[in-house]
Length: 342
Image 1 (tube, rainbow, N blue to C red):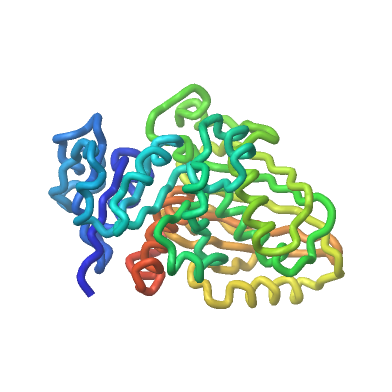
Image 2 (image 1 turned 90 degrees about the vertical axis):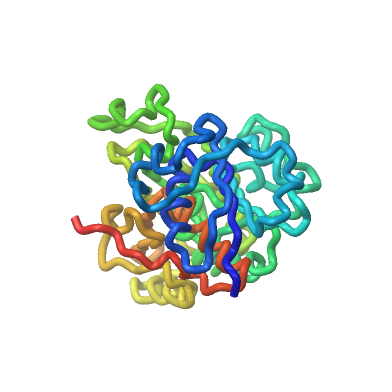
């Protein structure tokens, strides 16, 4: 097949950097446009030094007339929340879009506006498919627009999806999730800049994290999930990785063999979900598109640990995985690469 012609809007941040790192070596991809208004005219490799000698692409200003992008097959949007809302509706009808922000993840307008404090997409929202690849493949294959999941939402939903689908969850579901500093973006800010986090550990956004309604919405779509989700986020003193610890009660007594069998069956066709023998470790998934999961039960109580790279499986890698499905490719294409050790 001919190569997929790709534009990246917002290529100077961490998400854009990872999209470039992956797509430059994707056998079916050709990057034809990378925008970053503040870096327009600069070589991509002058901003992303890890790409030095690997690309001659230049950053450009975003075109004012998005109708001019008819030569593009798909646009990745790696922009701050609120910007893709105004841009994607103006793309040519032939162009697909994958949005890495939260602009199109929440169906309910009131809920979205309460968490994001920006106006909802309205009727245009119905055109978007939620892009958690392992649970929504069939819809993604035929989608024109993808709302790529948030990083915490990816780690949490993958940990809980088999239990939500089975209807086994009862009572509260408690999630204790931790993330590295790159999840806060490339621009430093108070309490998110890595030097402030390097030797520290703290919680943030209690009961207010914007990924909560996203997780609940998707688990309800998978099964009869009407449980209370108690979700807490913490800042890890590392640069990359998310570790989610999920605790719940089950309506039926399970053995560890039962629980693992349930998870293995649910993810039987999912190459990027791996099962760890004991607790996962974010070092094993850093720089990869894998999600490592461990499940353990004492009968009525169950714990699921999941670990991902927040910038790859939690953002750019999953976006490319979704692109592959949208264009009829094996979802693993361009994404099979290991992490480092150590």
